[in-house]
Image 1 (cartoon, rainbow, N blue to C red):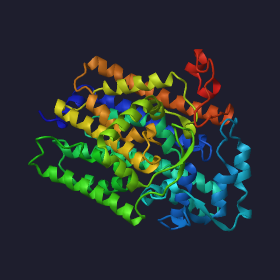
Image 2 (tube, rainbow, N blue to C red; image 1 turned 90 degrees about the vertical axis):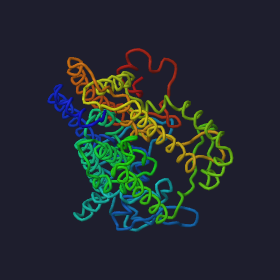
Image 3 (cartoon, one colour; image 1 turned 90 degrees about the horizontal axis):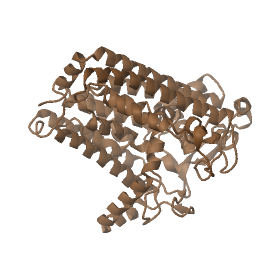
Image 4 (tube, one colour; image 1 turned 45 degrees about the vertical axis):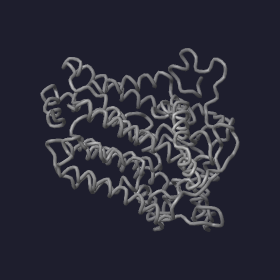
Length: 498
């Protein structure tokens, strides 16, 4: 039996109006949360936001590529842009309590006059990121410059434009989904999605392009839709965004139905376009990413990342050993990934109230049971699981090649948010195709309510921990002492309140 149009018709017959209503509520809550995070998150308190800022400023001046100064990778930028994260809004020091204040915003607003020269600044982690990921941020920065506004206003304009682009991409993806929209919205309703989209992070575009590519791929595979040009047009953007997510481009492929179907070639061409865009940008931007110093999660000591070719040689010399490294690293970090993919605001600095994490599980379960799931065979569902697994392996391998010390027996630098673009695939694979109508109605109400509540908890936790109570980190983790997180405080309050 085919899947897609039959699933869509069945959904419409089983109270599709209520499903659309619930999905609209969730989408509106996601949009509101993204826009609120633009202003609730203090400047440069999202992961790597200082480096995203430098990249966006570089593009706003019409330059696509970073440069080098000796062994350093970065660019010559206006000093007022450099000093904003360096002097005005430095990250909190480990072990030292920190709280944002409106006075910091007011003071930084008028400091541009004494910073009229230029200087070189490093941003090696993101030097090779595609310029396509920074177009919204750069447009916001350029708009502020055109109106003669202070540099800090360019920061917030950049965030706002980035947030609007993320909302637009998510909206296009939801509209393009032939069925299973609840699976896509459930992934986007996790506070991590909104937190990243409300910052200067390139994750806003990466997640958006991945969701859109998945939706267009499923749409092409659907029996009622045969136009391949939307997927072909979107594929290069995903390739330039992040090559590790290319598996989502072939999620709509059906075996063996498409083996002799012209749509098979559309999927193949889309994947080829994306791979060519990825490789083309890598070559244009100078090949492998620059080396940088990191703190080993195993030893706690500083170590330099390995050259990609040397690290690849380690994998090829003993592939089975690398498989063991992957399995060991993933299983060890899996609990951390779960926390991060739901929500750990700041630079993974603090936890949401502990009840937020099972609430996220309830929200996802309700989304899966809300109806409109794909009428797919077990073979097709296995295909989606394999694609999600393949993407996860690519994520881990990319960080082993570019962010891990030489010949390490672990993978360094992987965060739960990196798996967010793959989560809808996993949810579609387990989404029931037939749920009794009374259960669907209840599930939709629970989905809309729990998603809205979860996003509200994420916003309130960020507001309290950033601006009201403050927070402390020790080596990137909330300090957890005896009794911390116990009782009602841990269940109902974010970790700085424990």
